[in-house]
Image 1: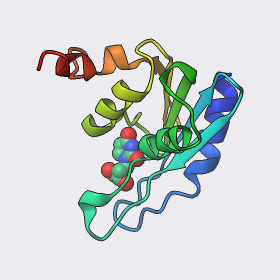
Image 2 (image 1 turned 180 degrees about the horizontal axis):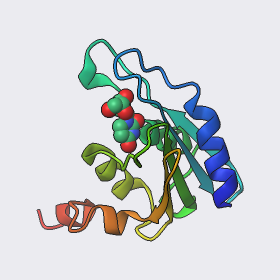
Image 3 (image 1 turned 90 degrees about the horizontal axis):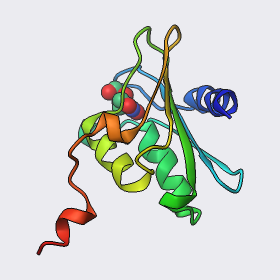
Length: 133
Ligand code: THU
């Protein structure tokens, strides 16, 4: 499972549209029905509207009807030497959309680690917090 996810993440990374950073990221989500959803980072001249690879992959999964309970694992790869861990905004999105303990495989050209969103975003703000209002 891990190897297939990483393979697909590396493949979609080639489609990254990165004229500003030249930093390519690819992501792939595996769902319980065996479907994979991939995304690459897509930049914009208005830098702030750049869309990260992992968000694009997760939004593709949700757009296809997948939901939190359907998600098995996520892989995120980047072509630098160092592992690129998800940015803060992506951690918030992952927290909402991916199970707390689902494996998140992070890989650069030379390193690989496994984590999950519970570890990457402790004490997160979530739907639960809105129940108090
Ligand atoms: N980026 C991602 O796509 N995912 C990450 O986890 C970190 C950063 C993208 C955004 C931008 O296109 C480029 O990497 C440099 O920040």
